[in-house]
Length: 111
Length: 123
Image (cartoon, rainbow over all chains, first blue to last red; front, side, top):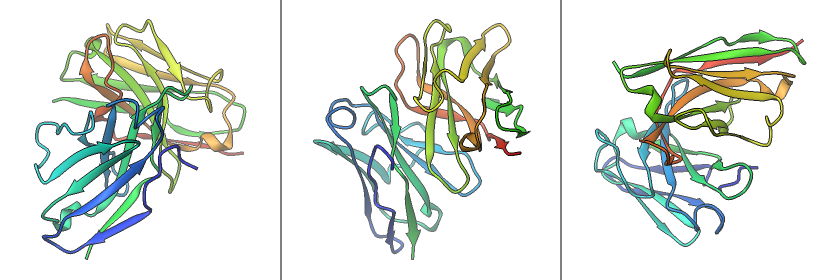
């Protein structure tokens, strides 16, 4: 069982917006702004999409945005496109001995 | 070209050892904390270890503590992972990754990843 909880799957039609949640505790997501999001296609390396809760790396589309409320972080993708279909993982720093925890991943399907 | 390239994976018997390498190029390697992250077949991501930019601080996931050792050679722009007493549950693709922030304080996010190297622990 992963330390951070994500829905197993979400789906949306092209042009729509979707949100993926990532729920932790006050020891990780709720206590620090070190939440990041990664996109991964099957057989490929992950790609950083959001860091420090809401910052986008250079080159990442502004259709991707991040936020946090309490112990839950969220990734929102607006104007869904076919190429957004992938697995998405959240991650956070944690005060536990593990130091870094990931969510179990969410499979995004673009209908 | 900014990149990380892992090597050293393969098939190994339980209880044996393996050493992974990650060659960095295109950026000032010595300025960044570095990580190993793994992914078991069909599973999610799992953080394995972090080493500070200068190699003075190292931390490990509980699942590998006492068995794995992370190290770096800043003169050769290379990151290592020495894996001892390997178990079947260590079977995974191992990625090296760079911290998003340069300097003494890590950001705990990973902005550059290698393609990964597969480690299979099986008799």
